[in-house]
Amino acid sequence: MARSSYPAEVLTPEGQVYQGEVEMISTRTATGSLGVLANHAPLMAMLEPTELKLYKSGSENPGSAEVDRFAQGEGYLQVVDNSALLIVEDALRVDEIDRPALESRLEEARQGLENAEEGSEEQDRRRREIKRAEAFLAIGGEGS
Image (tube, helix red, strand yellow):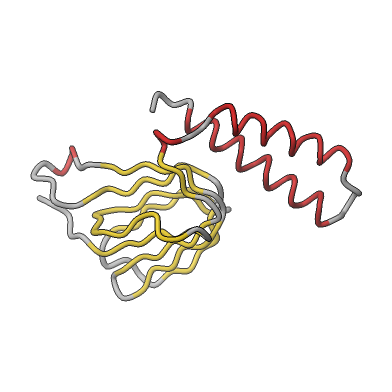
């Protein structure tokens, strides 16, 4: 039996990354992994860097739904009126991950963290950059 679908949209500061019908969204919040199906209760959640999976509708075989995979930065998820909106810092298609650029960003963030003043906003920003780069590198290394 096929699952019901609902509209989903993924936005970054650069613009819209995805818009379409999905059967399920799989992502992660600070408290753990989250799967959102159609008719989910209203929800507002803070998202962590992780692999975002959008299970697209229209598959005849429920076990073989087409999946759009993204490396997702931190952001927010809103589910209301049987639709989902994700507003995230970054969303890169897994096949577009640039490992050398991410490794360079990670090294730069680590060096910046060493030089940042304890308890400063710079220190917090560098920690977020490290977390995002490490998550994106892990996602890109999963045989994409």
